[in-house]
Image (tube, rainbow, N blue to C red; front, side):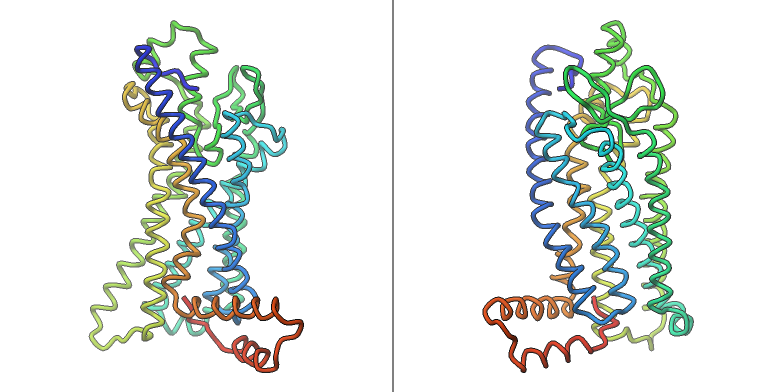
Length: 376
């Protein structure tokens, strides 16, 4: 438990808030896992198996794969947080699991950027899209995105390590200095603020509490580079590109009085993407803000206490994005919703009878052969 400088009453109050927010974080993680796994699994099944392969299905299939990979890591962190940040999984998973989180984070945001550019090109360069916007070309772009995301997760795999502290095993960043700076549950982005307080108290003695109380502490240069790079390439720059793309779409749509969007399909597609991007921004903004504020020197005690309390909650909010996307597809995309109903119907028919009726087989075959290239 982090020891916040100040009176005994202040420490006890901070401890109560920290414990309460840890419980809230565990609850959010559990809800995200319960919704995210079947939700994204349904997206993967319908987009990958029930729909004819199209540009849109390739985009959202890859996005769902990234989200479900993120959700699969949640049980590890739920147990980790429930054990008061003891890491029971060993050295190898200490490197792998946090790396997977960063891997899926970058894959998700890069895919959202690519989808936004794709929407923009459909409006601005329709002739070019007609000649070059193919399933094969988009699949190659998705492959490049996964490779780029893997490159960005390599520093996490390199620096993560386990160490024993106060009788428990912890998964920490090891920057090659005398002490580790911990990243307990927020394994995917930031070094934990609460453990920073604890590490300085334990390793450096009470004399440094005066400096820490003033917010004067040093952060490894490698961590500064990692957090800034991650915030710029994983948040600021991507959303700048998205904003430009959607601004161009709105400008072209309103500028051309003879322009008619691709009926309800175009409007539905654009609406879905806007909701997905907005959800990503809302979920990840606190996550990156905490990371950037942490590496800012000379923070006051009040702000540090706030960062301590927001540490786990901002992480839980970021994870929540992994279960929001499939919900958006179901409630916003009518074609996708129809496909889900057909798929569930087929499951139920298969469960109640040994053989599907000829009419059911005919409906399924006809549905599978339809070209739904503008779905979502």
